[in-house]
Amino acid sequence: MEERRVNVTVNGEPKVADVEPRMLLAHFLREVLGLTGTHIGCDTTNCGACTVNFDGKPIKSCTMFAVQADGHEVETVEGISRASELHAVQEGFKEEHGLQCGFCTSGMMMTAKALLEENPNPTEEDVRWALSGNLCRCTGYQNIVKSVLWAAEKMRSEAAVRR
Amino acid sequence: MYPSRFRYEAPRSLSEALDLLKLYGEDAKILAGGQSLTPMIKLRFTSFEVLIDINNIPGLDYHRADSDGTLHFGALCRHSDLEHSELLHRQQPTMAAAAPLIADPIVRNRGTLVGSLCHADPQGDWASVMLALNGEIIAASAEGERVIPVSELVVGPFQNALRQGEIAVEARVPAPKGTVSGDYLKLERRVGDFATVGVAVALESSGSTVSRAGIALTGVGPQNIKATAAEQALVGNSLNSGTIDQAARLAAEAAQPKTDHRGSAEYKRHVVQTFVSRALANRQPARAA
Image (cartoon, rainbow over all chains, first blue to last red; front, side, top):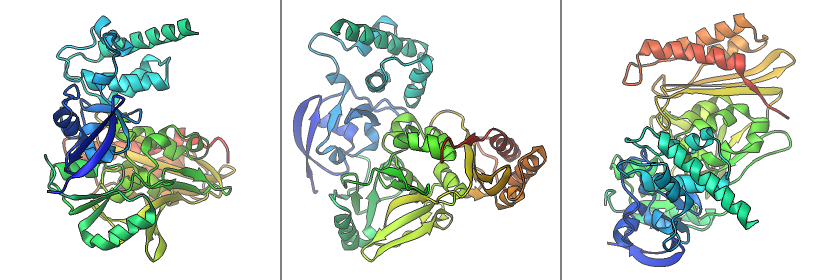
């Protein structure tokens, strides 16, 4: 069984591991690094539960091999809060009740975070468009969209205070 | 782990990739965006001894226009690059309309135009766009480069005309000779689904006369269909309700839809007619030459 060495920065920390090339990035994160916040839902590139940010852009980690992350940066839901302080997106999901069962939530939040970094002032339409690759079977999306808009507003007001 | 075992190579240059392809021969497969290939490998619909990942090769992520308007798309130009491309919004409305309708936003961050064309999924959207635009693929090998029209690239479902030892390095859209307009309309049950029906329309006009017409259909046959009779009905004429109706009818006749979970054959044929008519009537102009 031939393994390859992978050097990857995960949530800001360098990680080194030897993995079989056929190991999916989602399995690497969950089983090798123990980062089980990234969920595996449909396993067919449909649902987006496994979404992580790869060099800042959301990708489906069930549809990439771990060896492909060599030399790249991966951010998972475990990496977005700072110490005990939740990220604005996480706070938004809490404040606006953006989840029921919670299975899709980490993927939703990673997509939302990437959206808000690119577009700090999205319209509801922008949010719905950005989240259209992440499926939720509980909420009907209403509160998820509200959560992201809540986070956008919070991040804008924080940015205004810093200026 | 779902896929069967494979060897992984990550070349840093095109020549290294071509050497590896020569070394491993038909056991090797090129991995670009991987948004179609990886799911197929996971489901074991297909397997390869060696995957040659071209994502680490610099200089393939471009898309650009020559001064005559010829468009070039590198093998690592991703759907999301095209979705946000100012160049396409300015110059190529059919592609600009199609890009945001490919798969879903997360898949678009990885998947590539060239990879999608080579994958030759009969349900693929880009092949219709490229058929309407007379697009081409540039295949590189140790012997040099050759040009393959997209109409000849697809030889069957999931089968392309690349020869052993060749890598598709670029897609190309020839320079337009007239004023460009076009659109891509797609009916899908939900975001990320394959098209129930897709219609690509690409026109070049001189004054009010259509000098070149490209019309191609997605999801209504064993492969993407170029609606040649509908195209010919427009060339040399101006667009009016008569010519639009005629082209829409001929395109619907060219469709070979099958009844399935996305709709009945009759329904799909009707959608083709409606979409061709709508795309011709509401087509988007290129903003600048």
